[in-house]
Image 1 (cartoon, rainbow, N blue to C red):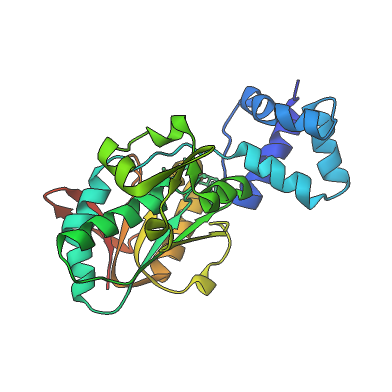
Image 2 (image 1 turned 45 degrees about the horizontal axis):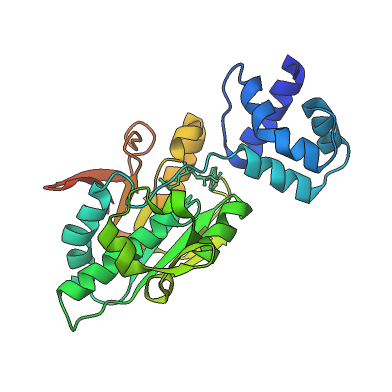
Length: 271
Ligand SMILES: C[S@@+](CC[C@H](N)C(=O)[O-])C[C@H]1O[C@@H](n2cnc3c(N)ncnc32)[C@H](O)[C@@H]1O
C-alpha cells in the first residue's frame, strides 16, 4: 500500500519533472504502472522504490519511472479530420508560401502521428506530380521507450490495424520478420528526439505546423498555459496547431484563433 504521504510526494515529483497531474486517490494506478519496475529493480514495494529515489538520485531509475507513468495510447490517423485538413487545406496553403514546410509532432508517442503526417504528404505529392515539397517532421516525446519504437518504425499485428486502411498498409509498409516496417520514403521525412514539454524548446527552431495532441489533458491549467505559450513562440507567422479532439487552447492562451474548414477546425497562431 502507498500511504498518503508517499502518494503526495510521488505526485509532486511527477508534476514538477514533467507536468503530469495524477489527481486524488489514484494509488492503484501508481502501483499497477510501477509493478514491473519493482521486479526489475528488485524492490519489495512502491514505498521502497520511492525511498530509493529520494535517497540516491539514479537517473536510469528516474527515467524508467517516468516512462512507466506516461500514457502512450496512440493510433494511425487518429480522429481522421486533422489529416483531411492537412491534405486539402494546409499542404496547398503552406506550400504556396514557398520554401520548406516544418512540422512538429509534440508528444509523438511511438511515431504513428509523425508517420501518418508523412503518408499524407506522400499521397498529396502523388496527386499533383511532378511537384515535390520539402517537408520535415520532428517527433518529440518525454518517454525514451516510445522514441525507440518510433525510430525503429516496426509495428506489430495489433498496432498496425489501429486506424490504418488496407490500402495504406499495402502502400506504406513492408513486411519484416517481426511486423510491418514503415517504408523509407515515409521514414525519410521524420526524425525523433527526446523533449520534455515543460522545459524550454527555443533550440528546436520554428515550425509551420504543430500537432500537440492528447497530452495537454494530463497537465494542470498552469502547465497547459506554459506549454501553449511556448508552442506559440516556436511557430512561424500564420502557423497552424492541432490539439486533441477533447482539448482546447481558449481558456489557457490567447495566442491562437480558430480557423474553420469544411473538414473541421484547426488553430492558427495570431500575428
Ligand atoms: C496519449 S499519448 C498521445 C500521442 C499522440 N500525440 C496522439 O495523439 O495519438 C501522450 C504522449 O505524451 C507524452 N508526454 C507526457 N508528458 C510529456 C511531457 N511533459 N513532455 C513530452 N511528452 C510528454 C507521453 O510520453 C505520451 O507518449
